[in-house]
Length: 103
Image (cartoon, rainbow, N blue to C red; front, side, top):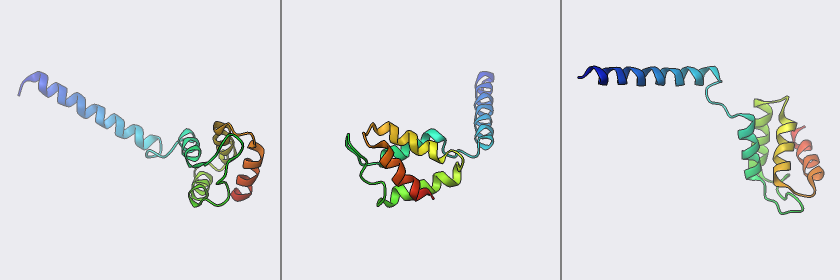
C-alpha cells in the first residue's frame, strides 16, 4: 500500500472518531428544539383559519409528551413556534387547546 493511501485512511479514521465524540457530547443525537418544532408543525392539520387536530390526534399527544420529557422548560415555546409556523388566524385558540393537554 502506498504511503498516501495509508495517510488517507488514517485521516478518515480520525474524522470518524471526531464525529462519534461529537455525538456523545451532544447527547447521542437527540432531537433539537428545531427538530421538535418542525415535527409538530408537520403533524398539524390546518387551513388559514385554525388547526383541526389539536385535541384528538394521538401522534400530536405523544409528541407533546416527548417534548415535555426532553425540554420541560421550553415546551411552551416549542408549541408556540410550531403554531406560529402554520400562520393560522386562531393561534391563541390552538395554543390554549394544546396547553391544556400539556398540563
